[in-house]
Image (cartoon, rainbow, N blue to C red; front, side):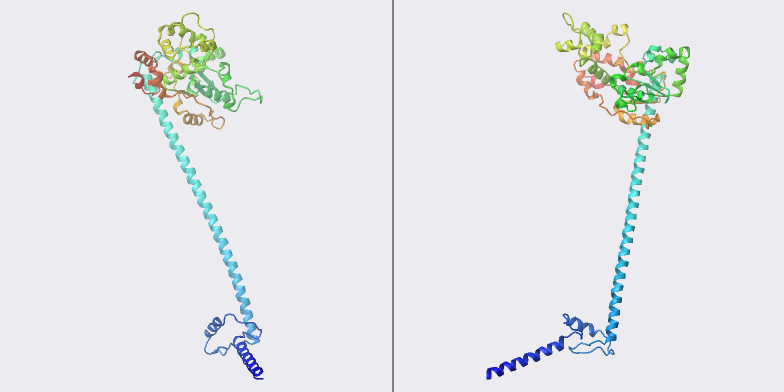
Length: 431
């Protein structure tokens, strides 16, 4: 009986405690527990002292229906304002992004413009340098030929009309583009002849049935066919007594150019190309002569270049130099074009060249020249392999040549060294 009463008293006290808790923490008539009572009391304490809804103590004010409606409108307005704020913010971000894109594009354009301007300025500086270099090269030839700073050489003072027709066979004429090119063997002449073939449209491609338009596609074995090129040597056959008059007119009005090379390096290149491997024509015409005269070969020489190479009987570089210095060589015939002096091939004292290119600066000179000729939109200079004979090889190649022979050889080619501004090869001419 005592235990039962104790349970009832405990139950009653527990119920009373629960009621008190409900009264203290009940948030609104609509029900639900307020999980943040301290935050709510802090919020209420911010109300005005005259506001009848502001109370002290643990209980909360329960809003009327009108107040709840007003609160709903405030919540909706707040939500609308927040939504509008988000839209404004998003719009602002879009505007900022658009401005950033515009700024970035503007900076890129400015950067691109600056790069293009810098490139144009660099090209202008380069062209100015090339033009100035050309003026130096041309002035040197003028001084040499006029006697101001002259090394005497055959034909320096003769007039153009005095040059025999057979010595004008290296002046190729392109009437369409008003160009005259004097080709020098072993100075990129194969590729320049390819360019002239494309410009003159003198060779038909068997694959297309049309003239070649790409110099690199022109077969190198065909480009040296003399029938492809109109040269001054052929003018007499074409124009008769008018030939010299037409030559003079074309020399006056056409753009004339040639390419040159260090004379000794050109000699080494010619020897390597014509005698360093089997070449039937050059063996029969020159190699066998060198072997007979200076080779001390007993018995009969091999009849062909292939047999000579198989037997190890081939001209040496010293025999080649001896042949060039032999007075009998000059008496019997003019030098072959591959080692004939440039002043004898192209007559720089009689032909006033507008452009003198060098093999040592071939790529830049070729690019500048094609612009000068106004054909850079029609043709490009072939980018094929270049002759690799270098100036640094001279000392090794001349190591076995007696010093007296070296100096005689320099005298033979001194006009080319002087005319075209190549330094005297002291490393070869002095021990």
